[in-house]
Length: 251
Image (cartoon, rainbow, N blue to C red):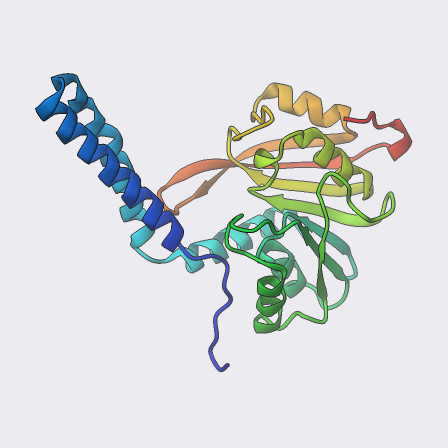
């Protein structure tokens, strides 16, 4: 289709969820204050918060901001022709496709488990996005778990992920696998928030020590500002593989 845009996620689910929560807390605040106790008025604060977040998702510009983030991520991480690149938790193929667009030749692979209702993406969505962006000959997608990556040791030049590691229970195993398939001297790069939902993900000095124990060095943790649905600071975490897989302890 002429002029078709890639589908890298819709804000609709976020709008509906935050509006619903905002309305729920507003109704609870009103009903509780009128019929139970004036203390329920404090529920107006979470109501306002969720309505504010919904407004942020409604303002448009999601695709443009995602494209900006992708360009800046790739600029800082780097890419060269002929490389092999792995995108872990690829979702809609967002990062994998971005790297493929920067290369005349090479191999880019995106892996994911594509759980139902896990972000609204699918392998079909990723393949179609690659077609729309003109890189279907340079990027492929596979169903695979980050904790058991189906590639040999020391295979990829760069292994990347975006907003994935912090939601993995036992994220250390996933990072260990990412390091295992990375070539000596290869680049590890992830974009993640400060804290995670499960598994104890935290961006701090202990994280740097953990990444060193998993076989990385030259680790940098740099603030990275995104603007959707609101301005917030996340972190670009990079490092290089410095020893063979046989020296990396199992997570």
